[in-house]
Image (tube, rainbow, N blue to C red; front, side):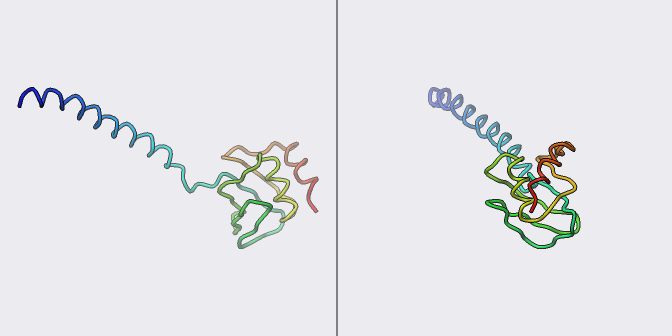
Length: 110
């Protein structure tokens, strides 16, 4: 019996440690889940849902947010201004576009 326990204990300990460590990494990965990647403030007030190419935007009093997109932020901005008009701010994961990047994006507005 002692021989069996001496063989099982290290395997059980390793398995338990793996589960604990994996749980810690998945919790960190999902901690930011639901936070929007993109934020913009349109020049004119918008409400409701808007679709710009392949990105779903949800707009309200505080501006518009989008969870994810398949293009680079500069391209996402261009598609957004083509559908929603010029913007006064645009950010990706908390980093605001510079004045130059925002001007280049707004230049594509219809």
